[in-house]
Image 1 (tube, rainbow, N blue to C red):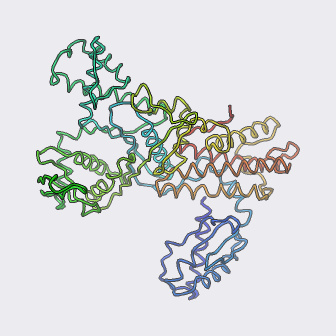
Image 2 (cartoon, rainbow, N blue to C red):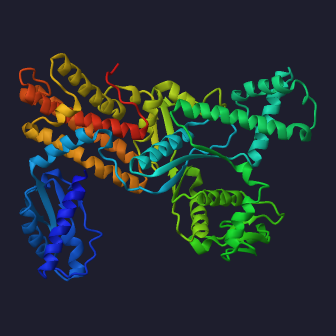
Image 3 (cartoon, helix red, strand yellow):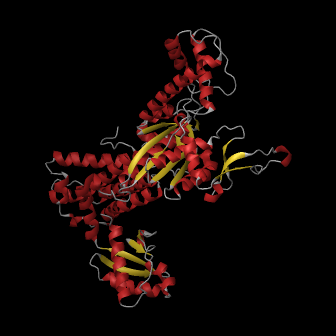
Length: 581
């Protein structure tokens, strides 16, 4: 049940009536007619822009359209009033029975309340984390992991068939550096003094990897030249790092469906196949790029390279895919990887990257657009930096990692649930401050606590109701006489519940799971406000043992809140709690 969709249908039906009367042209495009919450709740329950968007194409004044539309809508039993405001907006106030029905619908629907068929029949691939397999995940990866995982859950909730995917960057020079770093730890395990050169990985996390390598091969590689051990150590080290990364993701509650190896693209013809697909469209050519901005002409050495004509699909400049020496650029396997996704039959692709990949967005979108002739959309979401604080000071780097704070550091400090929720309290492209003290304090300023406390409060009421012999199963509550829910504070909660299906669909369309976290905070706030009103107005208290029917109606409202909080937290990957400790 999406009440906003239902009222929009009534608006469209009224507009159709106006067309039938000759009050509006027949060929109007109604696509942009919306029904949504007004910016100021004092103006009504819903507002429609119908008169504003139809005025120009119909050649009429918006207020004239709005006044005729208001007359028709006022005849609808569900609409108590329709008032024209400003230049032609139409504010609607709905009958209380509609809000009471929302409570009943949420209880009857349970976990399914709010789900939609937005993505029905469509397959989407969400690639996230995809960190180089050179060490443990850091706090930046944590934000990308949480965002990507919540986005995947959100898309599943609105009907898509979702594949969660991790792209293992094991085909570049960084894994050779990893192998050399592990080799140093291997020598250290044999009692040798070692020194890490610039560019190698000195973190303590490689100590057990070096020891494990010693256990596997003994002293076979001691004193041997690099060409003897590099390939084997590279594979061994990559496997060890991916095992570590999987453990880190598991600690955060993130589980991938696919781990895709970049290395699998090399020597298999897959890169060539992808570029042949572009070649067949006339988008691959030999040429010389202009010097990069900021380079003086004397510093620039023009070289002929194999180029992808990405400017034909919205990029700023064409991009090299093969160097003048015949080696692939880093962009070539990325094109092949996305081509592979397309060949696997996905209807939409989403990549979640760190903020440092901002310059990569246009070229990758151009590649997917070219490969699919615009048929398969690629959305790239960038996650901004996270600043960590503890005791009012920046949180220091991890000794284990050597240079950064790890995902495990954060989870060990506050737990996976808090980590996940807090990472979604800002839009992905906005910087995030993560204060270890504030995210654990029990106050309204802590959104994690505030939402969990709402759920726990309601759970407590239901326990006490059962102890008092009052039946509070969902079927009983859904059958209760909800007409007693008339107070402004009670209706505010019901109205917020009515927004849930609309909110989820908007979040799913825009790929913005942070909207769910924001909504849950607002819903919890309305619940707490109602709870506090009960301190002053006894009849608003959820449980009155002397009034079983009234208690069941009020508990039905509260239980509907837990239905939505549970669903919302499920999308975010957070477990609701029945008791606060």
